[in-house]
Image (cartoon, rainbow, N blue to C red; front, top):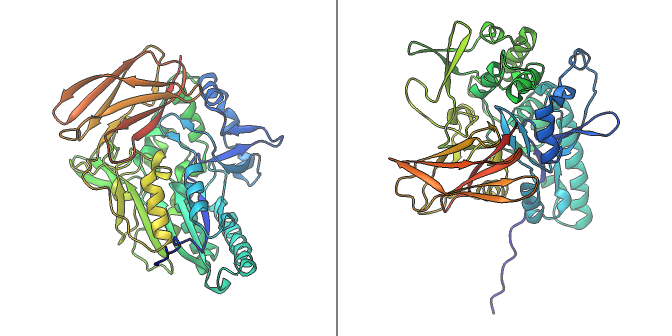
Length: 448
């Protein structure tokens, strides 16, 4: 009688590196200041208590006031940059498919600081994790430890930190592969949006509070777009430091970020000593270019009139390095790291297998508001909906877990507009279900 073969397992050491806002931060007393429960996180934005996260002059000089303790275990939110989801589902899947759970580790870091600050620590953590796991492989008799190498799964800014560690701190020597999820290799116009948002608004308003924080964070400047995105009458040019300073941002931080980008040298194709696989979000309304004039900024969902889409934060063409093709997923930026399709993609790459999209399914995009007032009429516009069958929009209060179905829809060609009135103050996860793919989702802050 034929015996059933064992399921392939991941034998390499794997390190998961989160994206911007994806690590819990604690102060010197061990109090959590980022990564709070949803109800507390909402109150911090509403009460202007996020100033504790502002990067100080001492921190820019090398002091370490906050400590990254672990990857997020609860959804977090920043106006304009939107939400970030926990990495629990991804970590659980990897541990399930690894030869032993000890093969999987996580690397939290202070996402407020520049990529050059976290990178040497990532390199040290990668070398140490690989050595620990090789010792386990030898002890458990799982194979030849010399055949075991390191793989990194990185979301968003985590991919840039990984590249810096590989190129400047020797991590490339032990890497077998790097898998990036929505990494802005060429930056994101969304970073300009947060620097421009809330100027002149009352300081306790969430967008103004988010901008006040972002302008102090070197890590935010590392996400500025580096491709030709400034539209001057149909002619595109790159964003310059003077443009950033014109938004009342920090000139020194802008110049330092430009210098780091130059050292990464992503503007030219270079052979890598390890495999690189990129997952890019697609089909979502995404700012791709901008127009500057008289102190105002206009953001466009196109480049020279062509909408390439993206994950609502990273334009699709920015989510892979030159010469690399990205696997695309119709999803927004934050959920890219936790959907079932992403987990399958990551495991397949770690096992050396290819990934195919679900058959017979249609991909939709969603315009989801980020900040609203209690009682406000809210609208979610679903794009690409024509002929894709039933589509449903729901929101879940992240504090109580209570779901609400948005039932009213207005059809406009291939666009469906779902409306709802009266969400309570706090954080809500909005999901658009269309069948086949995981729901397109994002986090919404309702503030009074």
